[in-house]
Length: 444
Image (cartoon, rainbow, N blue to C red; front, side, top):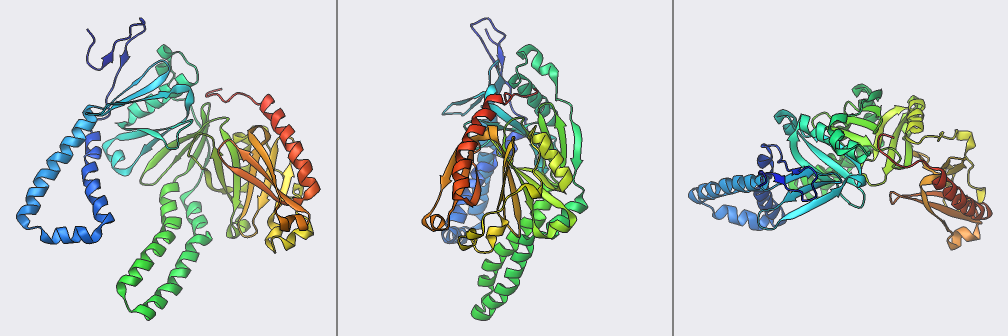
């Protein structure tokens, strides 16, 4: 007979031990029935208001007396019937009371595992694991585990994904990390103040709201228009500051480690070998200070930011760690489009540029907000040439490079003959790069 929580294995291998989530989890899941009611109220506010006006105090109390125990029971049962186990080859998650569902997550398909702690979870001493898995659009997650258990489970899963034997994987522990860069809160705050998006939304609100009041004299109309504008301004400044606070970048054998967050702390990993594209973003007001923002496209992962702000020299050194063998081309290495391109894209044609080295395809665009995209040749999945009738009349074409993260980097407004030659040359570079590339492995 098998003990509870243990699945018997007829092959003679050690039994699979199933575990439950942290006991605080029912408190999180109990909100599901309440969320359903709130969703109905938002979807039909008039109907919700009519129903609320009909409620008496007695009816409201009776409703709460039924809703609160029902929500608590739902949260408890959903927790009680949720189990997870780590086998030799997969992470197995069983859920469901009436309709059972078992998720089998193959360990070799795991690309990244992040540990996140929302504010209330930090108070309770718990955390959630978010798993980036190849072939899925969103992250699978285990919420919640004890903070220590979450980190230990993350280390075990990464060790097994790296090829360690199951009996020794739990002894490997979390790979050591060496800090590379920490973004001071003051620098982050100044960089956000120098971001144009915040001031654009505030300017729009300052102009549009008085005009709306003059035209309608309706407070509700002003509020309906002003709240989204102020919310957008806050999201691009205060929201980003809270999310990117204390941004720390470290290097470890299992990838680059990222820790950040003022209220909700996140512990993320950029897996080695999975970065498809790196972008250096340089807003206009950052240039005098020499700051850039580093963004990523990672195959099988939703992580998209490496550095919120950093000196350009430091950012380029980090890029060389993310893309081994790649050096960011200097500005003089980029060739501009021919002068005939000004008839296709007036003024802004000057912001485009292209540089191709032995290791990377680099495309630059933008005048006010410059973006430099770097794609290693080994990560190119396909190359396309596009030429509209207006471009054909002026002898230019676009070359599109597609990557494994469903992203595209475009070299715009290249001379037609150069674009045709670039198409064939890039296809050959990509084949050679994939042949010589090292395998994408954890803890390599």
